[in-house]
Length: 448
Image 1 (spheres, rainbow, N blue to C red):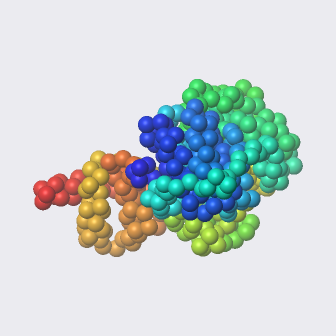
Image 2 (image 1 turned 90 degrees about the vertical axis):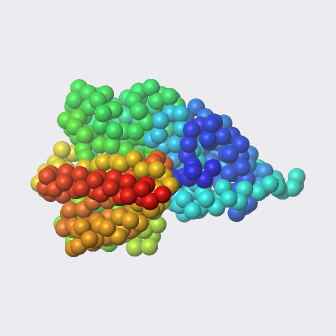
Image 3 (image 1 turned 120 degrees about the vertical axis):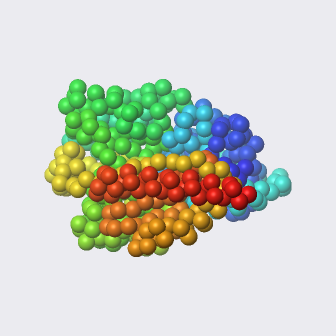
């Protein structure tokens, strides 16, 4: 079971790995750790209602009360968690339809870290509460407070013409309504909630957004937003239907928060230098964290940061300590109207950074030894480099030039990310580190 744990929660193939029995036992274990009242919601996946009900049965069997939100975006679960002892979302977020998972929030509405899940799975109790101490279940009547919260963030005065693509995911029930309540004109597609995600993939990647791009061009819309399966990630298309790089979008919002509120910004070790460039242009500073939104939140609380995010479209603000795609969209409209620019202007005047990714197959049992060996050999190859071990090994060579070597937590691979202002240098770094990784693995295999 422990191999199913990551920074995203407990996640795996529905029924085969994430089973009804596991969901019940996780609910029971949550109650055993801290009896209380927990909100539970689920995404559109076909197995999600079953899993949500079994998890609530586990909570109740352990003596905790459950408040059922039903179909709801993950950030809505986070929002309501603040009103109770915590919350649980049954979701696999942007993963393929055959996957599902369990994501837990504490009473601040923040996602818990992987160590919390490890503790839950290690301490599943065998005892239930007594017959007169069992918990109860109630149904929440809609997501009204959450919708009002989202609308309260909007500061726009103009009526924007907005294309919306929920991708048949959980934001079908919130995104169009929120933008209409904020006074905007909404053009939605892929609006029927469907766990098979027939309209496009559950991740709002550029190759899946052609229909939204066509909708924008056909109707002369101002902007388009697309969301992942559970609504914590989003993507932006400009007024021409062109995808806005996630690095640039994150950097511009980080710059906006720095200018408005001061204070540091948190991004993970994998984020592009364009974010750092934009934050520094406003006199701000960057803190880096491990990959995964729980670690972004953790570092934000520690450093007093005003904004945080990852370049997968997951942003975190002081409004809610959980990524929320619709909230991020509202903030983007605030930014565009405040600066009086079009979405396409977000790219204007920026230096070009060349970022590339690669992966090298590595047996799981060798990963730790390989990384230990690299820690010793890299300073000899790059003697003036700054080495960080926040998450994997991040080698900073010059300003805005770096390489990250990071083992996958779920696959037998080691990922390499390199970035520089020089395309040739980026390719050279990828090639050099790939060669070093293969050479290190071969040496370790010969010793075994």
